[in-house]
Length: 182
Ligand SMILES: Cc1cc2nc3c(=O)[nH]c(=O)nc-3n(C[C@H](O)[C@H](O)[C@H](O)COP(=O)(O)O)c2cc1C
Image (spheres, rainbow, N blue to C red):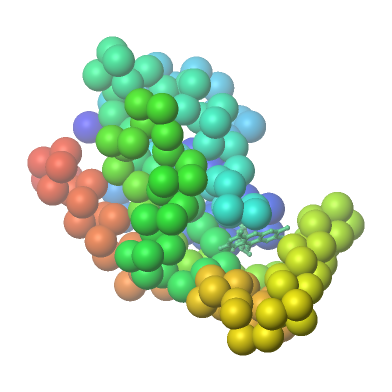
């Protein structure tokens, strides 16, 4: 199977996972902007970081993969929230709609590196945190688990990337492609 991992990463955590997946599957990992024509690949694994519940780059990636001609796609997202079935389901339903619901999807917990964020993202992040804090002030104790996790996550820099987080995704790819060399 001719596979490729393409990814969008802002502070490096998605890039780290892309490298680990590529190493495990013995295929290349390429930054999305440098990916070019993808038609030579049987399997395109796209990974994007999560920004305000949206997977960055996914819309464009979906247009570049020709699933109707048999090209296979797997999507993974890297975010702040815990790697749970609930968070995975939420992100999947928010991002894979209108005929894309069947695409295999995995959510991986990334990390937080404030020193690598650009000015625009820093502002955006502060605004997300502010809006959650406002909700809490208006209605104390009413924050969802996801919102609470978000506030905890952005208190300090950390790296939650691990091989273990990839187990389910790699197992799925190996089993569904029947690829012995992976
Ligand atoms: C502006 C901004 C918004 C974010 N929104 C979310 C979010 O909605 N859900 C989430 O799980 N993580 C969110 N994150 C956290 C990032 O997805 C997380 O830090 C991820 O590991 C970044 O991956 P990267 O290093 O590949 O860019 C946000 C981060 C920033 C800077």
